[in-house]
Image (cartoon, rainbow, N blue to C red; front, side, top):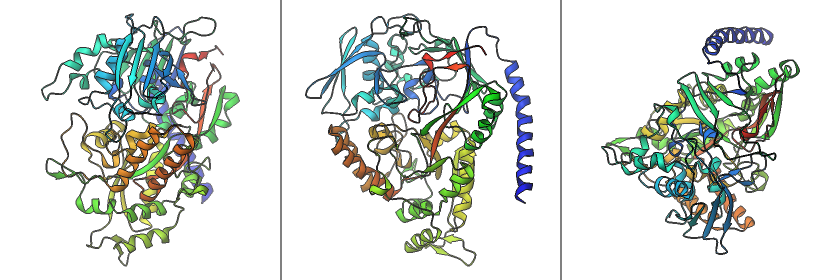
Length: 598
């Protein structure tokens, strides 16, 4: 039986490859010819916006097109100069000055100065009328006061902080906060002008209907063309500031083609056929692909890189929001009671068979995940040091459910104390085969404790819209990027954070919610994040974030699942890549990559 199933699997995979092959050939044939150097990469979804300040998704076009004041080294996590060549923190730690590089220019040739930096932070990021997700990383103290920023001269700006704020340098890194410096001469009017609802027109500026040639950038590339559902083409920015040690202007590669694909299976086909230059550069390579590709390295003229544990998290979360929108509850009150019961969430965690997930879905190339902080971080709390874990235990799950009034019928189906059948919907982004497989397993796992899960993968942008805008969801499966600094995730973990998806508040420009409640443990996390940001002593910060991790694992607003291993396959023609599990993008140093003819 096992051999028969294996053969059927191979036949099915072959049919998928055959079908996708025809589609990939037709798409490639329509791609414009190009004679310069280029690399071809891929993504599973179309961009949601061309506006850096309004972006809430990964991957995004801004990896290629924009930079911030600082940048994090993708292999060490060290904060490095980017648009700013240097900085100075005052002795009282309440002022920080940044000095821009000389002669910076926008992709249209206009000077990039301190005015653009002040505009970006003061008028956009710190503007309470603009729902920028970057704002949360800069909220300081109990009142969440934002810094003020002033221009000192054309190349210098100064941030004034209401109190010492230890994450400030990483907060200015575009990789963390998403604060990409914006062109004042292009976007200033859209901030000043209001729409019919009284919101700045900037919120809708640079949407995906905007002509890509109108998007003015400061990164290594500019957008040349966008064909929805097919590709985005980036070309070298002639005014990019960075040069190599010999004085040659970067980037080395003239053009990047970002193919938009419907699934990771399509990516695999295109990579094996030689049409893609990398796979696993956005999310780690799927384990079953690793097993297949490893045997083809030499013949396929590519190398599989192992960056160690990936810094991101993958988790299941329930909608804990008790608020109403236009008088209607966001979540069915019956289900809301289940979701807001700690023992219910803990029972679900015990019922998920993560060892089977690792063996069957990840082919053993991963490990269980238990913390909201990346394992590479010095603030990570190990289970042996006091972090609560949820080893697979169906009987424990059932005991927890019954302890809070849930009951089983003779068929093993679960009901609440009022006789309501326990059933909920679970969504994730379609095309991500790992998440689809995880969702399918969770459906089976929870059926063993009597819960019916209606699992439905949906379009990624639709998923984000449900989470961010309509809040029309019950449970979802998603990932969150990580890093060394815990405060990087303030927008997820603080109660008013723009990515606090499990109990999201109203954001700027959205209709207010009625009756939303913030729990005591959420307020305690708020307090801990404030304390952690104030503290500069690393040992004391460790104690603060240990407590944060313990609360998360006790309350389980999210249920962490599996820690992937960062694997990326790269063509041998691509030279200069620096890879580790720290960055959420494997080609973070795209500007220094080269391609060599084979």
